[in-house]
Image 1 (cartoon, rainbow, N blue to C red):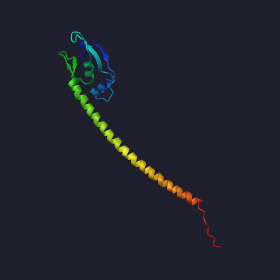
Image 2: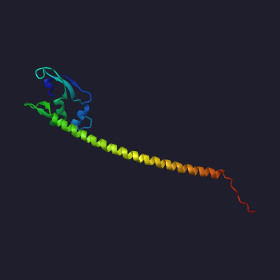
Image 3: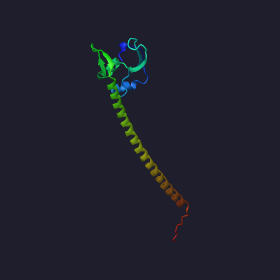
Image 4: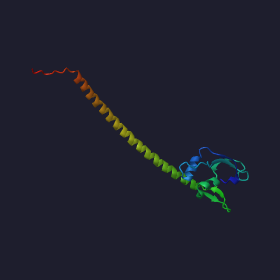
Length: 146
């Protein structure tokens, strides 16, 4: 969206994630570039509320994602490129989630095995402790050879 052709522009909550993906900086980009807006009457007489990205702001994050007018000023966001980037980032995150799930499953298995080992060791320790208690309680005879 070109700021020159819009009115009633308001920042959108949650758009920082989009900014981070566009900038490929892992959520370090602080400006929120997602907005709601209405086109001016000469473009959209009905004034339908729109959601989009501000071309001037997208240019600061990633200049390859905008088109320019004859004066070189940002005029539109290349949403097809943004969509491709978002899909790519989604797929990366999906792979990360799958890897984390696999890691968690392995850790759960290891924890279950360790719990069984702890129970076995506790049982063995209890048996040794019981045997020591019996040995203490049993009367001891001392041989006197004189």
